[in-house]
Length: 470
Image 1 (spheres, rainbow, N blue to C red):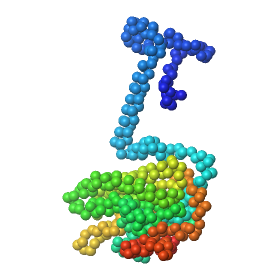
Image 2: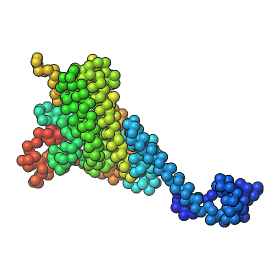
Image 3: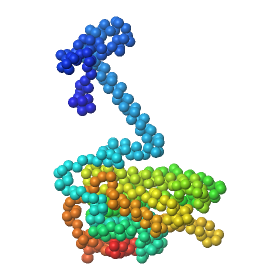
Image 4: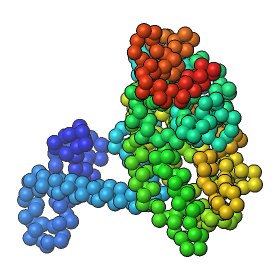
C-alpha cells in the first residue's frame, strides 16, 4: 500500500545500489555504509565529528524524523502551486474554461474533453436504452420555452391573438417552428416562448396556468429554452447606450459594466434552477439551452447611429460573456446528469455567430435595427429592435438542427420504461401540461376555470392552439 492509499509507514526509501547484490537478489539487511550514504549531505556540511556520530546511530532512528519533514515540505509545495494556479486562473479572464475544469475536477462532473464515466453492463441492460442523438430528441413531444428571441418577435406572421401589446408575439418563422418542420417528432410542438419573459418569471409563475415550465411533461423528448436577455436587461442597456449625447456622454455604455456583471452573476443561479425544474418534469428529455447572437460586426466599419465602434465592440463583448455564463451553467448541469448516470441531457447551443455577415449594421441585415420616429421624434428603440428577422430565425434554427443531429460529446440514454409507455394518445394528452385549461378534467375545478386564470387566458389559449395545431 502506498502512502497515498493510507500506509502509515510512508513510502520506502530507495536503497543504495551498493547494498543490492550484483545478481539482483534481495539484500539481507541495511549495511552500515548505506546509513552513512543516506546522511552524507548533512555529514559533509558539519564536519568529521558529525560524520563519526552519525555512523554509530541506528539507521531507523536517523531516517524516521526526516520523512515527516520531507512530507511537510512536499505538501507545502503542492499547496503553494495549487494556490498560485488558482490565482492565475481567476486573474486571467481568458482562463474561464480552466476554472470550469477545476470545478469539474473538484465535483466529479463531466467536462468537455474529459473521459466519460463508464457504464456497467447491469445499468445498460436494466433501465436505460442507448440512443442516437436524433432519435433521443424525437420520440416524444417538443416543448419550446424562452423569451422574444425564441418566440420570434420581430420575424413577422404572428399567431392569432399573440401580436398585441403585452402578448407573446409568437411568429410562424421562429426557430421552434422551423425545427418542428425539419424533424418527425412522435408527438407535437408545444410553442410557449413569450416575448418579454425573464428566467425569474419562469420560476415565479411555477404552479400557475401562465407558467412556461409547467408545460414540460414526462414524455417530452426535446426542450429548447432561450432565456436571460431580459434578466440582464440587454434592451435597456442598448437604450442607455443609444439615447445619449454622442459627443458628451462617451462612457454611457461602459459605465453600465458593473451592473451588467452583477446581473450575470445572479442569472447563473436562476438558470441553474430553471434547468433543474425542467429536468424534474422531463428527466429523459434533451434540454437544449440557447445563447444569444452577436448584434454588431466583429469589426464594426463605423458609427451605428449614436453608437461608436468601441460601443459596438463593448456590446458584443457583453453578449459573448453572457453566452459564456449560459454555456458554463449548461455544462455543469450536464456534468451532474451524466456523472450520476441519469437519462437525458443538458446541452448548450452556440448561436453567437449565427448572424455573421448579417449583423444589424450590414446592408443585408438579419436583425431589425433602430426604428426612426416621425420627423422631430429622433430614434426609437422599440420592442422588436435588435431582434432576428425571419432569415435570422432560420439561421438560428440551423444551429439547433445541427445540435439535434450531432448531439453532445457523449452518449445519450433514455429510460426503457418511458419508451415502453409512450404512445400517440399519451403524447397528445400530455401536451400543454396539467395546468393547461385544455387538459382540464370535466367536473373538476381546474386552474383554467378560475376567474384569476381567465384574466390571462389569451396567452394560454394561444399556446394551446399552437400545440393542438402542430
